[in-house]
View 1 (spheres, rainbow, N blue to C red):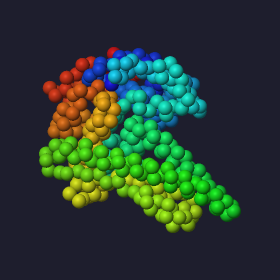
View 2 (cartoon, rainbow, N blue to C red):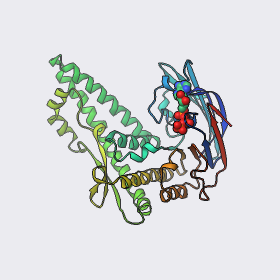
View 3 (cartoon, helix red, strand yellow):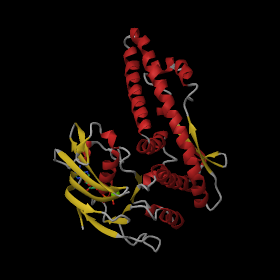
View 4 (spheres, helix red, strand yellow):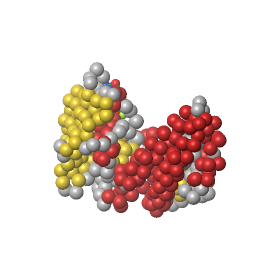
Amino acid sequence: MYIQSIELNNFRNYANLSMDFHPEKNILYGDNAQGKTNILEAIYYCGMTKSHKGSKEKEIIKMNEKEAHIRMHINKNGVDRRIDMHLKRNKPKGVAIDGIPIRKSQELLGLVNLVFFSPEDLSIIKRGPSERRRFLDMELCQLDPVYLHDLSKYNHVVDQRNNLLKQIAFDKSLLPTLEIWDQQLVEYGRKVIDRRKTQIQQLNAAIAPIHEKLSGGKEHLQLIYEASATEEAFADKLALNQDRDLFQKSTTLGPHRDDIMFVIDNIDIRKYGSQGQQRTAALSLKLAEITIIKQVVGDWPILLLDDVLSELDRNRQNCLLDSIQEIQTIITCTGLEEFIQERLHVNRVYKVVNGTVE
Ligand SMILES: Nc1ncnc2c1ncn2[C@@H]1O[C@H](COP(=O)(O)OP(=O)(O)OP(=O)(O)O)[C@@H](O)[C@H]1O
Ligand SMILES: [Mg+2]
């Protein structure tokens, strides 16, 4: 799978841009604040229907403009496909695939498989649980439409239940209605937990050899799903927690509060790992994500490397570059000399200057 071209209109600092990509290695270089990451963001947006940074539409649309457009041509399994996005301020975005509008933008997920890798991803292990859940969810949502459906339902139920908990604080007579949401919370929550656990198993199979190689055969890395309530105990624990939920006016357990533990030699490296250990494990995680997409989809994802190579030492750089040989990769960096070495055969180089690409 590879991106052929992208066209931007009023997206971030681009008034109009049209650019092609090589199916192999592409480099975007230029000074800070010129618009390199914005191009990767547009690609990510077109594939995943949201910004990798979590930005809102009104931040993405060029300042003083009302709307933005993105058009992306990809080649998937030898077939040319086109994605059109129309971003509006304060209104849902419009999405079309091959010229045919889709009802919900989520239906797009899975068409383009992407892996975005930025320096922030290197700190995923030391950051909070929400980052790790997000990693798992974004990966699963592009691979499994059933999961996408169950997770959206679950998140909706959590919102509704939290609203109700707030209302009950003022009106105790609403208490019996809580049960309806509890049932649905357990129903969808169990599905979410179950699917995440299977994914963790698959990740473990993929990550073990990768991490062993990256750590020079010294470390064995294992991921463990840390559930705030297991599938079996979810209903009971929820009932036991009702008073606490009513007091806090929010749902205090369930998959939206779960985490992934990273273990090396029986040590939880989220808490006790060295900085280098955490970063190596994070790189292993990204490489495992790429491997799994290839296994599930049967084709490599498109890889977006935002300023990440300069953050890695030579050994980790080489490991990354060796793993991506067959993968279309779009790399951003400030200078060309900082990393280019014989390990990477670059097919195309673009210079980004203040919202233009040469
Ligand atoms: N909605 C917007 N409208 C206009 N310009 C914007 C908008 N959002 C961001 N920008 C501009 O985009 C530029 C930043 O672009 P980007 O993050 O792609 O830079 P970069 O080339 O990746 O820089 P760095 O090397 O520092 O990462 C800034 O100049 C910023 O002001
Ligand atoms: Mg940038």
